[in-house]
Image (cartoon, rainbow, N blue to C red):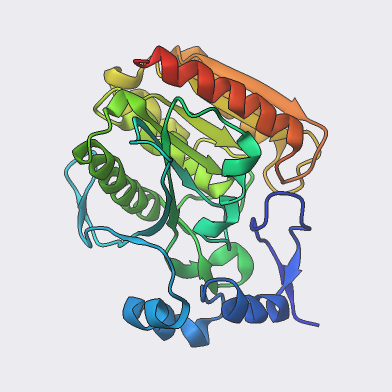
Length: 297
């Protein structure tokens, strides 16, 4: 049996503690996203992956300008789900640690949304990098994690570099005709942390941010970096009261900071661990239908 480690994949109910041996199988079966260092070279060859698996992706610019003008070197590729009609809205949703963009693909039909708003769903794949909390094992991650306790050091450069790449996705939707106020940033766990970090600093008014089972990274920098354009952006935060990975108190402290800063936060908890439940999906549906029409429908 391989060594167990932290993973945030399969959020819709699968046990989160999996083994390195299981993840070796995942490299073959789950979209060729290698979680072991010996296959990193394969993951860095998009042409080979495309040929082998025929994944549906959106290639994004390799160099992205972030909110402060710093240039990052991260490339994101994404799964995109198009609505039947011309899209008037977009949700960009980031997965959790160790997963990929396909992890939340099933959320779209589960939400049972009406034809209007007409939403394009964008599910980016995190780059593969070593993760300290998992003994340096390489896996899809938006940034390195030393610990999830609110006291450990944070990977500031990784967080800001990923925010730059997410910014490219936002601009791509804007350039494709989606108004910024019709764009929602969302995510689960580590992906939710990136949604919060990016949305609150974004220089154009967004439709809102949905943050599931997560926390606000680099919280101490928010007062100086928050952009006034999103000072009133709706925030949906949901968390499991039994979450063993992202402590409830850490999410609560993020909620309290956001509310103290003036953000309209919808806060909901559920008797679950580190996953997503049916009641949460229903609440997210109602929130989405509320904020998108308010943004222009």
